[in-house]
Length: 352
Image (cartoon, rainbow, N blue to C red; front, side, top):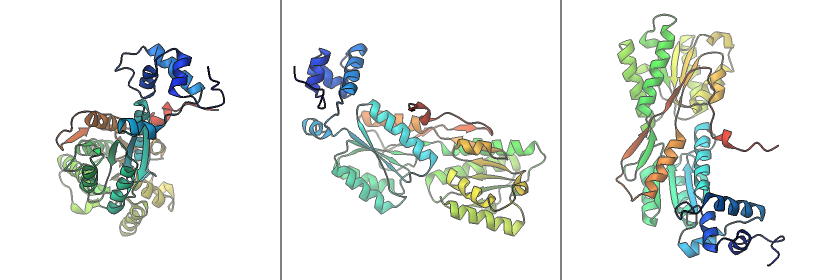
C-alpha cells in the first residue's frame, strides 16, 4: 500500500484504509450515504479517516464529473448585523451538513451591486443561491433565471421566485401589544405616548408598521401619523431622529418601537450623549434580537426571527420541483426583557 502519511488522502486511499468500496467512500464524503442506506458506523469510520489523513474534496473535479460544483451561495444585504450574521451561521452549518461548501457575500443594499455579485457567483458555477434581504429581488431573479440557477428569496419577498420570510405583521402585533401592556402597568397610555422609529420603503417595514398601527388603534383608540418616524436602516439617521424629537419635546416618548437592531444602535448612540437617568422610565420594543439589549437599564422587548427555519424551508423548496412564486411565512418569537437566548454560536466547538 502506498504511504499516504505525507500527502493528502484520496477517495481510493480511504477506500483501502476503511475496507469500503470507493463508491461508498464517495457517498459518505458527499453526504448522500443515508440515501444509499450505508451504515452509520461505516460513515463515521470513513469520516474519521478523512479527517485524520487530511482529505479535501476537489470541488472543481467533482463539478466536471457531475455538472455541480458543490457551492451554495447566500447573498446578504450587510454583514454587520446580528440577524444576518446569525442567518449566515445557520446557512453555513446546513450547507456543510449536506456535503456542500457555503459562499456568503454582501451587496450593501445596492441593487446594481446585487446583480453584479450574483453574476460573479454564477461565474464560479454555484449550484444554488439564497437571496436574503435584497433591495431588488426580482432583478436578481432575472439574472439567476437567465443562467438557469436555482434560487429562493429569504427575509424579503419577490414576485417571481418563491420566498420565505418572517411573519412581520404578526411579530409587530406581538411586540406592540407587549409594549402597551407593560406601559399600562404604570398607568394609562395615550396614543401620543407610543412612537415607531426606523424602517424604509420595503415589505418588512410596511408589514411591521401595519401591525403596529392595527394594535395601537385597537388598544389605544387612535394612531396619529406623526407617531411613525421612518429613518431607514441607518444608526446615524436614527440617532438624529431621536435627537430631533428630544430637542422638540424636551423628552423621548414614554414608549416606542424600533424597527431593527440597526435602529436600536441609533438609539444607543443618542442615549450615550445624555444622562441615562433622564430616560430611566422608557419602554422599548425592538424588531430584532440581540442578547445585549436584554440587559439595558430599561425594559426592552424584542422579536427573534427564526432564520434557521427559513434556511431549512429554503432548502426544502430548492430540493423539490420548482413551485409557484408564493411567499411562505415563518412565525417569529417574542422575547421578554432580561432574557438571553441561545443561538447558532452555541453549536461551535470550544477550542482552547
